[in-house]
Length: 448
Image 1 (tube, rainbow, N blue to C red):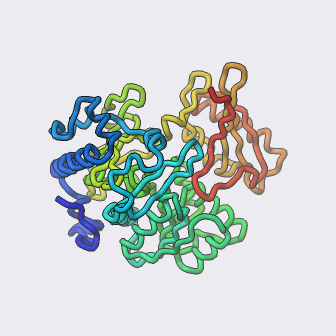
Image 2 (tube, rainbow, N blue to C red):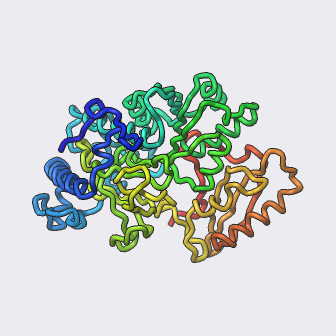
Image 3 (cartoon, rainbow, N blue to C red):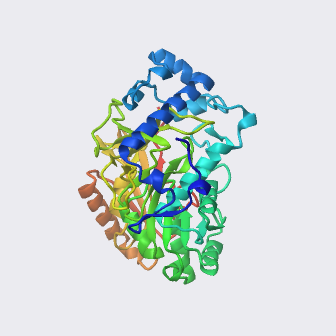
């Protein structure tokens, strides 16, 4: 069974009123889905073996060859791939196609080392557009909608990924990218945008600027926001929905696997549907690499099933999540990723307590008298790690209230998360705003 494009499938409407981009793929019985996954896994392993020296060498070292993979469970015999492999083989060492067959290159910012370069054939770009259109449709976007795209364009995969998917869906795209927030707000109002694509932190920044300008985005034509590229909490979802007057939908992706559109929530907002006809998902214990029971938290590991230029075998995302294959009210049969709660490499160990920034965010968002902008400053005091939480007061709060606000935040973080912290309350606007991924943690600890 080959990958369909939307031009072949079209937008389909089920008899019960449920709407899909590709009804056949999205509602495939799980047994048939597993058969398709295995067929595509065998092709992916052969592609990696034949064309990527690193994958071939590692499979040989592990004592496995593609033809010996006879069930999906045999995937566990295949070695892992990590972001370090992309950096160690910079720039083109993991590509399975020559540059003459590559239609596009994207790259990470390289802030923690060499950039990670990813490549796409023309067919890869088509698959990406299809899956982004599928994701946007699941989120509630439709042909004819105006989609305001505030994801960054360029080497970051977010902007062009959303753009191509929106066009494939048949929507009208406003390719705004990040920045120029006042102009963004004016265009949302003037052009009648129905769908907003942005990082959740930038969506809140837009809401804040709009309120300062006296613009009520809740009265705009915005209906749905598709937010991703960074972890965000349920509390932040509520804050965004209240201040922008839309339904906030979570989307997931990473450039090493494809970009945005690897998984997306439907209107039920009950987990992100991972598109299993194109990706194999595992959830493993990050320490032992053993599978965890369905519903338990672990590290998400993804194998691509249809990528030509950059097949990724058991890629360790470092993202911590849970999955479920229980039926969804929307009728889609693909498993659901139950929100990314953090990254295994972002976990802080504070005086013996394992803490993810998202746990602290869940305490902060929606608290009285503080805004949803914050940073965690981690430093070493003697032999112990310490966290200072920097929060912003709301614009109408008197500075005399700052000490009591700090005590209230510290008390609730201690109660809900289990760690003692210092809390610094800052004036409105003092915490830096991000037009892309928010910088939530400043780690000042000496590097070992």
